[in-house]
Image 1 (cartoon, helix red, strand yellow):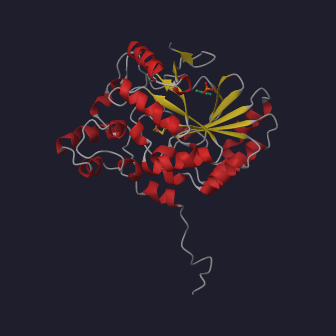
Image 2: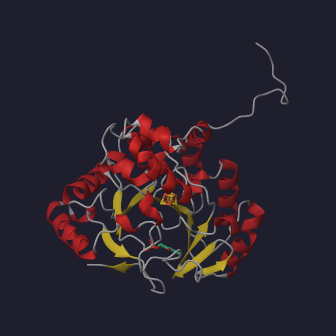
Image 3: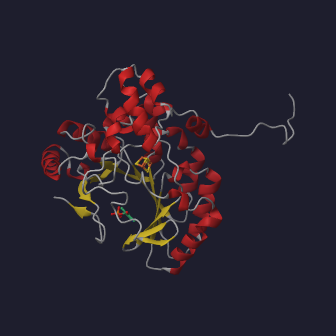
Length: 337
Ligand SMILES: *Cc1c(COP(=O)(O)O)cnc(C)c1O
Ligand code: SF4
């Protein structure tokens, strides 16, 4: 056995970081891997210029080759229609600018504040409401978070911090744990909520050390995962979601109602059933935020209401999410039924 000196030791990269580095970023590769028509390439390339393609292998593996309507593919495939911005659509549809109380810290609602921890995600969802967020101006490292931490410490009405992004789990453990440690020193904070899509798209990220860190925190952890379709919650994704739940971490799910992805009774019933089978509570069904480039995903509110009526007939009460939309300036997400 050879002893490696610290200098000659290979740089350690967590498995999930390697998986993120290996994610598919080229539209031609995506089409080829799924045996989809080459003719789609120009449209995909134009869409990818507006917001780059990004899809990890784990998520890609859950798509069905040759299926043009695959609900997972639809969420990540760039299209040239994303260049359209119909009336009513903008770059800041949910009033994030006005809600900023410190760099990267948004406070819209009583008792809770949302920290934009990073602009990085492990997947680029075409419907993303933050696809135009000025992330470059947001904090990147611990020092940059200081004004936000000071603002949190100065406002003792805040009891819950939401880590958002981008995706907070795109941060390395070193950064994430350092941030959590800082939050734990603020006496009036009681809960830590993590909004993330990484259990869905990059399950490798849910490591034992991450779960352990959350479990031992002084702050009560709440996880909100973002799954939009039952087919996402299979294989390695289902394994880590089960692991989270069995580790005692309360886990909720938030879904965006998306045309061509989950705008049917069957798709939503299957999604909610799958979630409760895994021990996850369906929390919100979100009406799409009207952000430029996403109009082709919009489902009329009327259709959403009809879908909710059908969900109530088919599911246990606790499995029915709240159908809401975000209206800038309102004191809470606005219920639509
Ligand atoms: C959506 C959101 C929250 C969370 O709202 P809940 O109804 O508690 O889930 C908190 N802060 C901001 C800025 C938000 O946009
Ligand atoms: S993971 Fe969330 S923030 Fe990132 S692209 Fe998807 S919807 Fe947007």
